[in-house]
Image (cartoon, rainbow, N blue to C red; front, top):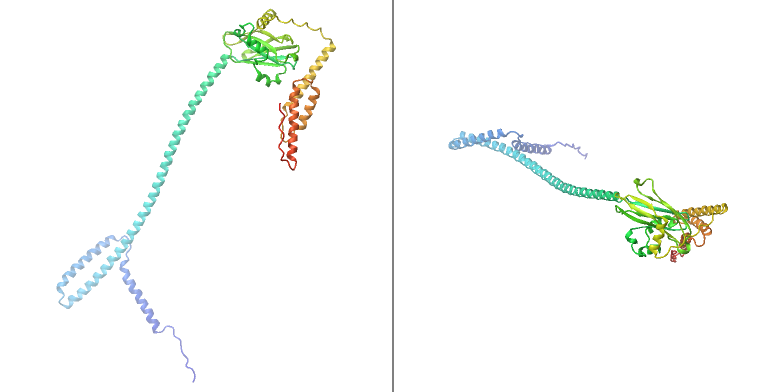
Length: 423
């Protein structure tokens, strides 16, 4: 039997029923929701709708009395439908107003949060302002304290300058023609020379009273230079200026000495001191009297030979030794020899000065130069010269540093370095 051909229809009655039902449901939902939608800004319409609702309720009350006939029933039914529509319209407006109220509340909450944030910022800025005000007050107090301290220091500086100007400090410098002889100066008040013999003067001549040890040590190791600084001179006073050789008795030589008193610009040119000669037998001498005027300005008066003899006898309690007979006038050959010795001595001191300026470098880059100069000086200096000790110390110190570096360079360089040379 031949199969019957079947037609496939998509849009049949069942599908149309479903579509019609869905359309009807959509239309019903739109009809129900439409009364609830009303654009904002219609508050006067709400009042009118409320009045109309009140009228319909009033008509409803009037029609209750006419419920007996059919026409009244139809009118009542129509009125109820109108009332329901009016209620739905009012409900929609109420929903809109509720949504607007919620939106306003959200805006109010957001504004409150922003206001609280701004308040916190204001509080923070207020605290920073108060802190800055405190720091400003503290800085102002510190500034006032510094100004007061600056003023105090300024006043103290002015007082010191006035005191320094009133004291008129000055310096006495003596230079010997023989650099191997050390010099020392003493400015003694007349009260210090009242006793016979004077204990203070005896201690000075014996080397215990050393006026300017620090300054002399800094100036060419006390070789041929004597310096004394006076910074506390009383007006209308005077002092006796003495000069001596500081060498041990066996090293003293005949020495010619000259010097000057040097001060500030008011002492220009310097006050020249007399040229004197000291001997091993008479190794100290009274140069003269230094007098200070009302402005503490020094003035010098050279002592005479009679005054020097009298001071020697008074201070030592013994007769002064006779002045050695001056040697005969040297010949041209002797003067040339002495000049050559002075030139050689000056060259030695220049070489020693060069050696003293070379620093001790831990890396050893200056060792060769120091050793070379040390060896040359040790060959040229006399056996008992005081410079040999300083040269020998520098040479031994360099050798010790080299030995220490060699120990550190060995593989087992754990051996402790030997102590340095003692001076």
